[in-house]
Length: 393
Image (tube, rainbow, N blue to C red; front, top):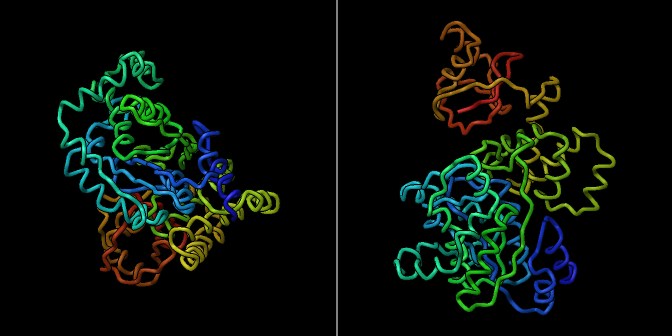
C-alpha cells in the first residue's frame, strides 16, 4: 500500500471521529514524524479484541514510521476511569496493578512492535512530582465542565456518588499527554471527554494541542454492551485457539460484518464479496479463521475450525445454547470433571466412561481419568455420546 492510501486507510477504517481531521491529515502527508499516544489502565490481566481495535490503529501509525507511546496507567489505575460508568469503579491496589501489568506488553506485542515503541508508566511522574503539581493541574479544569459530562450527569440524577478523584481523572490523563509531548492521542469513542481534556491541559501548559483519533467500540458477545472484562462478554487475546474460535461462532449474525471490519485485516471489498456469496454459518467460520490466524497462526486456526465442526456441525448443536458446567477451580482431573457433570452415578462408572474414550475437551479425547486439566473457562466438554457443556469457572 502506497503512503497516500495508507494515510487514507488510517484516517477512515475503523475511525469514528478525528479532531482536527484536516490538521492531522496535512501533517501525516507532510512526512513529519509524530508522537502518537495510547494509554491503557491495567484494570484486568487480559487484553481483548476490544482493546485490539485501537491497538491496531496504533500499529498503523507505527508502520508509517511514527513514534508510538504506550502508557500503562499504573497510577491512574488506582483511581479508575469513570468513562461510561454508572457507579464508581473500585480502586485497584498496588498488588492488583502489578499482577495485571505482568502480561500486558506480551499481549500488546501481538499487534504492535513493543521493542520499537516507547513504553511509559504514569507513576513515573505522578509518584514523584507531589502536591504542588497536582494543584497546578487542577486549575486546568473546572467543576462545571466535569459535571457536564454525560456519565456524571446520569449518576447525579440517580443519586449516585461521584468522588473528587474521579473528577480529577481526565486531568491526570491529559497530563500524561503533556509529559510525553503527544502530537496525537488515540482512544475509543467513550474516551472523548478525556481525550479533549488532554488538549485543554496541553493548552494550560503552553503546549501545542494534540490531535485526537477515536475508534468505535466493539460490541461484546452479548450483542448489547461494549466488550469488557467486567461485562464478561469478551474474547481475550491470550485465549487458546479453540476457545477463541468457539466464542466467535457464538456471535449473533448481525455482529459478523462489524467484527470483520474491526477485528480482521481483510479489505472492505473482500469483506463485501464474502458477505454476498457465503451463507451466515460459513461467513462466521471464515471470520473465526481470520481472527484466530492473527493471534495463533493459520495452522492452529485450521485445527480450531476442524474441532468445532467435529463437535458441533455434524451433530447440529447450537454452540451458544450449550448448558454450563460450573467448576470451582481451573485445575481439575478428568475424572472429577465427569463427576461434576453428573452424567454418571458412581466414580467407577465415570472412570470407565473416560477409559472408553467418551470424554473430550475441545474435541480432544481424554482417556486418562487422572490427567490434570488446566482450564480457563469457555472450553467445550463432551461427556458420553450426546452430552455437551460449556465450562465455566
